[in-house]
Amino acid sequence: MKKRTILIVPDSFKGSLSGKDVADAIASGFQADKFEVITLPVSDGGDGALDVLKTTLKLKEKRLKTHNAYGITQDTEYLYDDSGAAYVAVSASSGIHNLKNTILNPLIASTYGTGEVFDYIIESGVNTINLFLGGSATIDGGTGLLAALGALFFDDNKIIESHKTNPLIKYNSVKPARAVNRLKNIRINLITDVDNPVTGKLGAARIYGPQKGAGNEDVDIIERKMVLWVKFLEEVSGKKLNHIAGMGAAGGIGLPLMAFSNANICKGADWFVDKLNINELIERADVVITGEGSIDKQTSMGKIPGEIAKIANNKNKIIIGVCGKSSKSITGFDMLFSLMDEFDVSEKYAMANTKALLTKLAGSIARKI
Image 1 (spheres, rainbow, N blue to C red):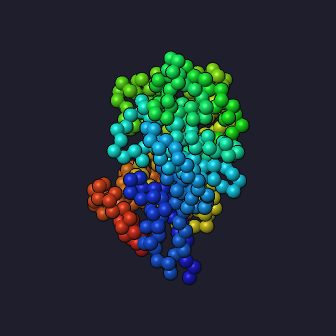
Image 2: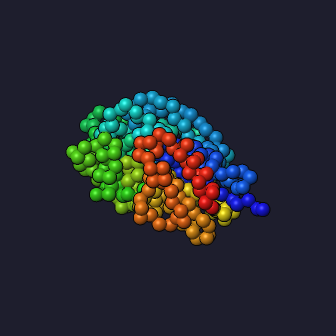
Image 3: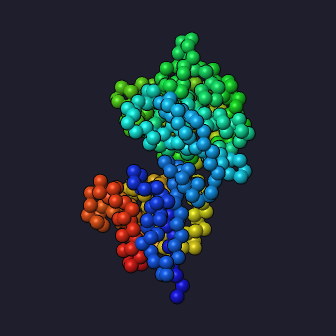
């Protein structure tokens, strides 16, 4: 009898397991003599994007010394392929996840470290950069990145040390020419899992500021400075930037890249679906299993599990969602399982025991299908 093909394509369970570990845990619940199991960890551009690409596409890794969001030297990685295209994550160089025991303050946090990666890549002759925008600790409008590429930001007549503070907050004049010249021939894909504009009530400061340590007054300061920065970039570049969906991702780091390079914004889910040939894999499968830490209303608004569910539904495949917790109103899945509901456990317990619970749940799913 022909084995049924199970395609397991999960995102990470944030705070618990990487996408690969989730896929492996689910796969271990299916008996090899009964099923052909294909695992493919995925991402939509947030934390873990580079790990997914290393696992699935076998990209090469390069490690550099850069500054983190608060000016402390760290090791940072980026990836590259045989064509020379580079894959860079803001979370790796200016991310919030590696700032444990740090008091968060976006009035100080800078994307200078991401700019240092860009500096190295551009000097190496690379002309295509894929930049993943999730997981930043910063809301600096890309001023730190631009400074690392040679732009000079001044507080009165004093050059701002942009690796130690957020230039957006302190600058009152800027000379961007050197950075602009270095960016003008670079192709950049800005890969994001959100569609927020950079300013306004849904912008970078108001929506993401509190998550990055901003109080109410801080949010107001950042918003005012960001409005002025956007106006300056629009005047210099001749491009309209303020209402572009996704420009608010990673604290507006994409602003100068959109202004001065050959850049475009990509929805992370769409980018990964195309890059990893997910359509073809779903076509081969009998059952598709996807998921992430929480499946809720955001899932159907561009998150990768929601996009995979749409593709599977269009191809008339059985689509199963697994997660740590879920909203009861979610549609689009033939079956939806949350660890908290299935095992009647707390969120804390589910996060601490995700691997074992996923394996047990997968065994139950295998018996049902």
